[in-house]
Image 1 (cartoon, rainbow, N blue to C red):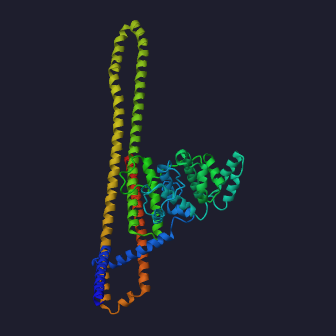
Image 2: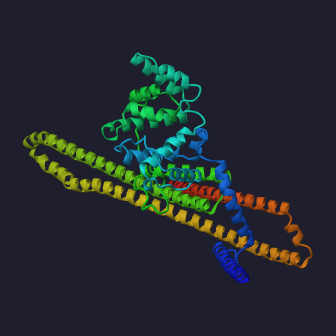
Length: 516
């Protein structure tokens, strides 16, 4: 009826109003309703939001050759295996060695796909929040989707032939020779996987996964026969004697409690941070430009600067302690020589006394003259001891004072160089600000002229022009990222030049003091 039609139309009208409010709310959350926002920035964010998933799908970690997966998902401690494999091995080593049928169970498919997407998108993953079957399924999926087996298509048949040899020694020698012929990334991955599975078989009483069960479950995943996988597990200690399964410690982040306290730890952490920085640069050069990646880039650069400063200060402290130790050793050696001189003087005086006694008996008239001559010698002996002691002690004190004065001079020179660098940077900042003001005025004039002209909107509505604008914005962001990395390198080179200038000034001052 008409009433029913009116009721439906009112209901549809209310639903439409609610939908419009909801859309306006989402627009407000996204910043589209703010009049103060720059429309260019808003368009760039939308373009990046659309482009990033495509970029991640074009540069994945799963389903690509092993070397590409290692390059895109690095372990920054120097182990050349993909991070997803390392994380899965660490998880099973900590939580799954005693779980029954650990590599037979399958995880929930949706969770496995979620983890796969997170690794492909270079997101931080916490495997501890998932069940062991989910992690093992992710591990098997990565190995199953490799375009080429771990043993490579070329060497795989030869491995199968070597596994069929019955003589134990000959079989081990042939397998070792074939392992050495594998590419580096394949050899590292094979060694870690086999040694990890060996740890699993060591707990077969609780997890029910002996060598035969593992071979049945995982040989299709590894694209090899049961016999070959069983043979590799039996010869694992002979094939990979130097491989030790160690838990991966990722590079420090902004939320880390503190930096390492010893030079070895700082050097190791510095290598990790530099490896992470290189990976970020490679990803951003390939198009992975986003706000989170830029924030991570600056965070890594800041941590690297802190590590270098701390390592430099610790090296200075070690140098100071070594110089102090050498001064103390030289002082001790001087004291030992002085004591040896005293003992020699005493021995000489004792040798001279018997020679003078006969002269006293035979010629008493000359005794007085001898005693007059000897008296001053005896009386002058203590002052000579004091004179020999004082120069040594004063010498060590002068050396310590000279070292402190030299350090003070170095700090003063470094402070002066930093002040000159600060004034130079301030002048450049003022020049950049003046240039920004000039460009803003020029932009305002240009926008006013465009608004006053007629038909200006027809060019912006052209899809080719808008596409070109988006491409230019993307190129601009890449150039900005390259510029920031170049600025960081320039600052590091400036710091190195500053230290060299300070050292040259110290050398010049020391030469002038020697000439004086």
